[in-house]
Length: 267
Image (tube, rainbow, N blue to C red; front, top):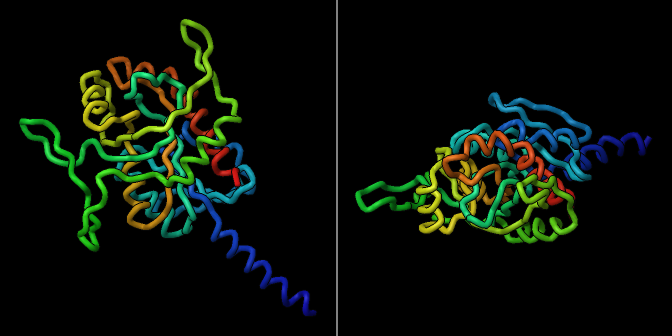
């Protein structure tokens, strides 16, 4: 009889412990999440405010996964809902990006050390002036640059050494992708201009540009949740960006997801 009485308590404690140790995983659009979803076990879907969240086990760890949609507002909404309803101990983003650093090529991976907006501020005759966002409750300024969690960055770099990523086929042959740390910049624009990429490289020392990361970073910062943004390069954000993205996005999405899966499963 005592064992029967204890069973609900043990199950309740197990559920509580599981909830305290969950990792949030985000991606902007379906190709960024296909591999991760296919590797999840014991999947259960919950729809909250029209956003679908999938809880399950990924690489031995409890996770909750969601598609943010493209753009900063969508990313902030989904991140907020995830934090409010699932209380993740950390959030990791998996996705593609345009390469700003000329040393990066499609398929290469950028582990974000810092994330910032490239379109928040004032545009004047002298150019773009970058502002800090503000916490709407305290009205205190947030950092202009959000730091990704140092332990997660180090974990990503460490586990990447033992991974096999999809190779990129170039004119010189098949090449294994590089994994680099760098600054990721975010804006509600698809960058396909060599002039803009040169400016982002010069002014912000950007390695890659995308459309969600800083919104996720700001949300996590204001809610005290550690985060990491991982992006694989789909194009070089120049005049060929749209065509290159269509060519390389599947490989890029796969490489980013491969690293995210390893980060989630590492101790």
